[in-house]
Amino acid sequence: MTAGPFLMADNVDAALAALAAGAKPVAGGTDLVVGARQGKDPLPPSLVAIDRIAELATITSTEETVAIGAAVTHARLMTDNLIVGDYTALADAAALVGSPATRNVGTLGGNVMNGSPAMDTGAPLVVFGALVELKSQAGARLVPPANLWVGPGTTSASNDELCTACVLPRRPPRSGSAYIRLEYRRAMEIAVVGAAASVELNEAGELQHVAVALTAVAPTIMAVENLDTVLDQPMSDEVLDAVASLASSQAKPISDLRAGAEYRAHAVGVMARRAVDAAARRAGGEHIPVPVNRAEGVGRTERS
Ligand SMILES: Cc1cc2nc3c(=O)[nH]c(=O)nc-3n(C[C@H](O)[C@H](O)[C@H](O)COP(=O)(O)OP(=O)(O)OC[C@H]3O[C@@H](n4cnc5c(N)ncnc54)[C@H](O)[C@@H]3O)c2cc1C
Image 1: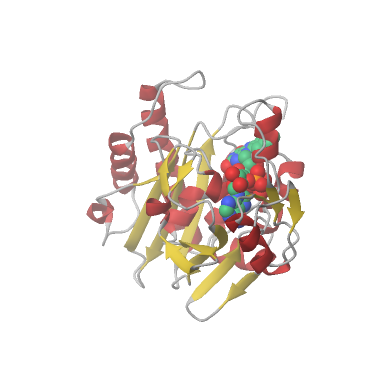
Image 2: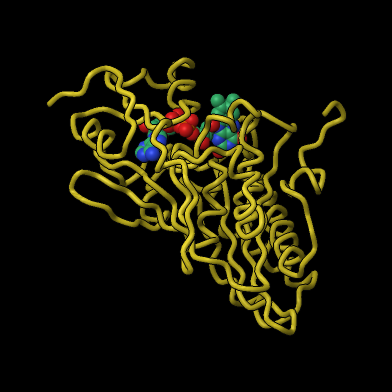
């Protein structure tokens, strides 16, 4: 069977059959269609729309996991009670994506499968230990993001695989998270650099677990290593300095017209510091509204 030029699938099996026949999925179209219009890549000859597949637009929980369907939009992620309450960094990130129009149709699956090193939902997914669910007619598999994103705009998924969900482990007590990005103006701008943090405190209020991942400072979203050196102590300026230094020294940024490599490496340390600080404050019960960027005034300009 060959795929027609445009099919609207109303269930996953129909979408998988279209992919097997050579079609490419389109969800919100905010990368695929906008990119084609801007002359980045022509539209593929055959497309299957997946945005009307109800089972991909659900957020479902079990005792161990929360599965966010690939077609869940950024607008929903930034307002859903479970996401805002337990996976706040993801809500922070979704709230920064583009404009209201972009967020109303742009999806988590599209963000993840587009594979940009500047994707905003990527670093939160990494710090939560999320797995990406991929399905084809041959079966399903769960892939850690680090194995999925292999280079800028490139994933290890085969052409016949559909991202159906991101599966996140349930959050422990006394945990908090945050995502913050550097941007030069308030809206419609992708991250110059960004950082997500997840923090768990023990009963004494000391750091029990800290995870940090960075946006736009490497060919893919990257996790910061050796954070165990800051554990088993209360939050302090020294802890935040150590986080900033680990993030800046491990970043491998490029220079482009938006920022030089040296500036990006420094700035991502500042973002990591702020993300860990906000995550720890949330873990301690402080209410910091989504997104942290706005709450902390990052990206605010005179006119915004
Ligand atoms: C004005 C504007 C501002 C933006 N700002 C931001 C920003 O601030 N931060 C940010 O991260 N992004 C931003 N983006 C990029 C884009 O909006 C996001 O990446 C969005 O999440 C893409 O989702 P989508 O559903 O529109 O993807 P689509 O365009 O439909 O698809 C993107 C890619 O993923 C593939 N795909 C989609 N869904 C699946 C699936 N379920 N399984 C397998 N492959 C799939 C498609 O084939 C395509 O290759 C912006 C875009 C625009 C136009």
